[in-house]
Amino acid sequence: MARRLGGPGPYYPARAADLGITGYAVLQCALRASGRLQDCKVVADAPDDEDFDNAAMRMAQKGWLTAKPRLVDGQPVDEPRVQVVVPFRMGARR
Image (cartoon, rainbow, N blue to C red; front, side, top):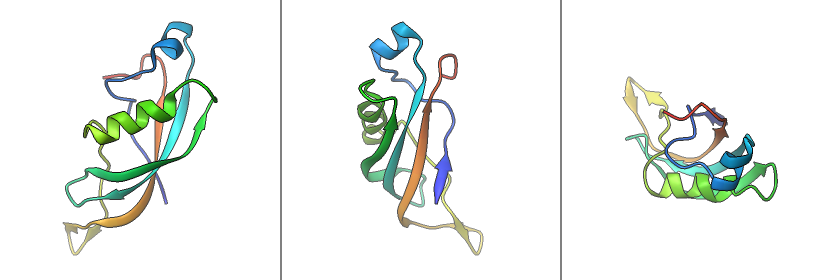
């Protein structure tokens, strides 16, 4: 299951930002009931060689990326594996 996140957060690869390049990274992670992503790995990113994969991993490791967990009986639950799409768009940072 792929989940879309909001803006790319506080880190945008410098070269991509300077050139106005947009892209994305897809991470596969464990999703905790708190919304924190853990044990992530990159499964895709585009365009190649723009460092979006490393930027997304850095943000996940620092807790800058979160996702909304699934609810069971009204309570958030851990999910062992989810895919999250991390978009990188100029002007999308908050």
